[in-house]
Length: 201
Image 1 (cartoon, rainbow, N blue to C red):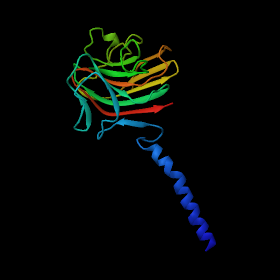
Image 2 (image 1 turned 30 degrees about the vertical axis):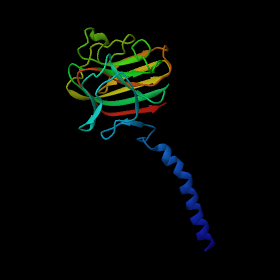
Image 3 (image 1 turned 45 degrees about the horizontal axis):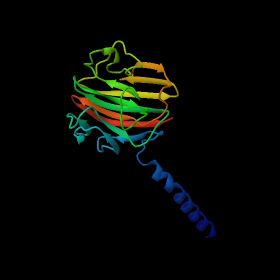
Image 4 (image 1 turned 30 degrees about the horizontal axis):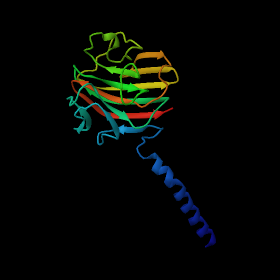
């Protein structure tokens, strides 16, 4: 009987010890991935600029500016070394992207962060879809319009790599911006985000 009681107490202690871990892990998708957007939730973001962000048909969608300038959903947390995995659909004329390591999360631009572009119709295609504006050109530029795509961004120290649908578009070294939040941008056209995840490294 004493052995049984000790066993029961042991199980209770293990259960209590595991409880905080369960709380910490909520919102994570295993292997350290944190899910910010999925088909059921928009996620918790700060907003800079105004667009008609909304959940629609299992995706986070924007297709209209409601203020001046581009609009951004800005992550609540700041990140230094990380991987981002994002599934998106863009119209042929969409101007969107993911800005990383934003040094000023209130005034976001390609001069104070790394802008990983989604912009098939950019006049200078060298900094179009798959490029990092002002830092790493893409050649040839892949087209993302009219289909679902997967973008993977890895930032580790000075090394930054972008993959689009399994193909590397840029891989470069630069240490200008070391840490900051990341954003989902809306500029024009239609952009849909079906899943957005980040994994701190």
